[in-house]
Length: 411
Image 1 (spheres, rainbow, N blue to C red):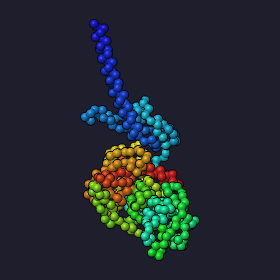
Image 2 (cartoon, rainbow, N blue to C red):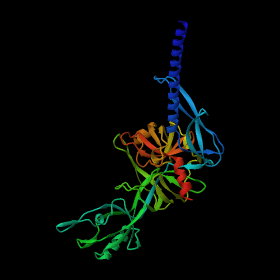
Image 3 (cartoon, rainbow, N blue to C red):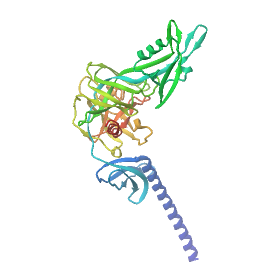
Image 4 (cartoon, rainbow, N blue to C red):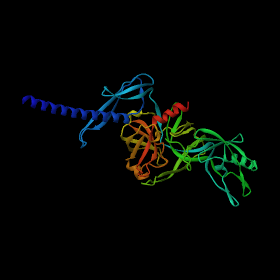
């Protein structure tokens, strides 16, 4: 009888231990999964510095018990792969570690104007041409489509819409050999103009330049290389990234601000304040506009660019210009940090909390793109988009991603 009771108790004890171990394992797997999702695949460190990544995890259903966990990665020299471990024991994932020197830039936040000239001629649309009782569309018939770039006609470089019209007129209705670019790929086609209302036409809606306003993010005080916008300049009709031939940077001033509301994003309206060029853009890609300033105005001292693994949810600031004075700091909150490399312009989700900002703009507005985001005295990112459904909210890009573009592509 005693042995039977002992066996029952042992069996119950084993079940309890099994349940506890199962709960512990589930918790560990949950923590590991969270580490995998919330830690970047690529990190930068200074020298042989060790890092520790902290986050909070709820261990009770009523959110009363919060515990802090450390995930440590052992560093080495230069660029190499290291294992990220939980509590220095449990392997979680491999990370690419890049050893760099500390990077200092001057945060800006000032409004600027840009006169943008495309590389070649951008095709906006292919239009029908009425010829008596029939309709033709030479552009579509030869395979052109919205977003294409016309580089050459009959071997001649196309730098303006006037260049193209000259070739079309000179053709007398004869076929034209066209060299085009589509999503980085070069192709050739033949287009035949038609005569309509006494002129030769090809039915293409085209563009060779544009102009607008944006916010400067930062510049390197040693080289005067700048980064701005946090996203590329795209065609307003096609949404395609405009191929950059040349672009002039000039001073701009604010005329009015259209306050944003939920469902209707606001906008900073302004004008070019000078005909003098203060810099030139050399690169337009998905992460921003980059180039060199001639004589940059320094409102602020250089600050350090934060490593992306050091950016946290919580209080932060943006630096932007909302009048004709100097850029000012406004309070925001970083509500989400995203390391997804596929969406580089939405690394941060932010919400405006400063009453001065909310009263004047309604939150994040168009024209504010490029405004520096700072946290703990470091530059962490730049504003990129407003959330249309909630004008107080928006997105941002990591400043480190923008600095990498300058470092890699403007040397």
